[in-house]
Image (tube, rainbow, N blue to C red):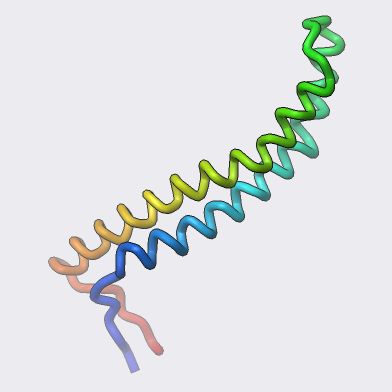
Length: 100
């Protein structure tokens, strides 16, 4: 039986998008800590810039907290805007048809 998705609740879409974005942000931060931070630390040591290794690793560890939060905020806004645009489009051209 085909059903039509006529409207998406903005807050619901925004919350789900925020959680998914935060999870992706955490994954990206972990990968950054695992691959980018050691390379950057090595480069600063070889270049003789005087940036302490502990400071570089501290920035990498801080990114595990900061990146998911920033991504969640952006995901929340993006999810709300996306749902709003979908609702406008569905009003004029019809919603997505789903087989439930």
